[in-house]
Length: 316
Image (cartoon, rainbow, N blue to C red; front, side, top):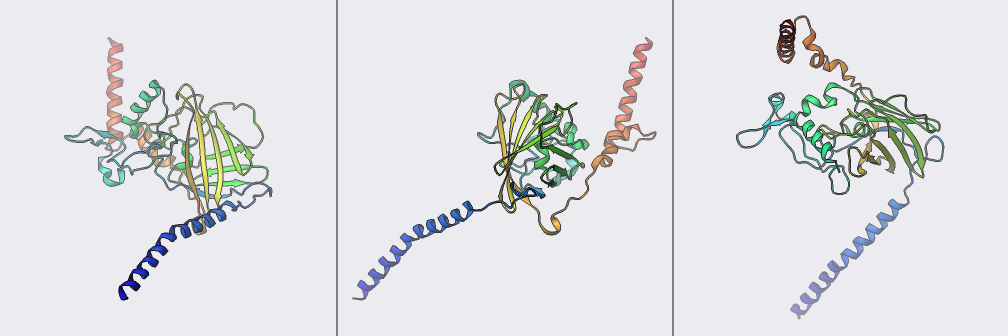
């Protein structure tokens, strides 16, 4: 009799376990239903979402927008067994290493470069520390400014949208009426925005082709067009997507996408990172009357030798 009771109890317990997935899916269905009815807080015009706030990513796309493993440094050189950090960055040790990232390029995860553009990217990557515009504090361009490790703030009313970036004090004034052609190319280009439902769509054109997409040498071109889509997904998150096209650089249009997170409390403020003064020694130290020991002095000596050689050649 005791054995029969035990068997019945076990069967009942197993039956209860088997019904748990149904209960769990029911709970998930309820959660999905709650998420489906979420609606973004309305902004200053009372019609469209409120995008105001300080936003930041939680990814490593600024190192490389394609998926990548961790590595010893941005710039490597051949080692006895595996590549090792380049002499210019070896002293940085672990803080100069590259963290892994899942990438933000959609589809197969690869940028569809033309053969010529891929060769340029590879050459850039081999000398990333020397050639990346970020190193010299040049403005980062779009979309790179949106996934750097420093936050940015969106200010918008019913008549204007303005984005301020912490890095280098970069800014974007987003036109809400279609503007005339830009008078010239610029680091951040020209932005024209419009609403499509709860998504803010921004077309970015006329950026300088010298802006990079990340620290790994990925590039844009002379006629690259960016179409951004900013879509709130909760009170503290926003989905960002950008389609990038330029037939001279890519074989087809392609997209990046990632999540943005809204800061709150005392974190909801930008700090100053006006880095021009930080790179003066790097860029102009060799022009001192008495250059300091190190790269500046070495460059000053090298340029002096080159001038002397040119003068001697002319003298002959």
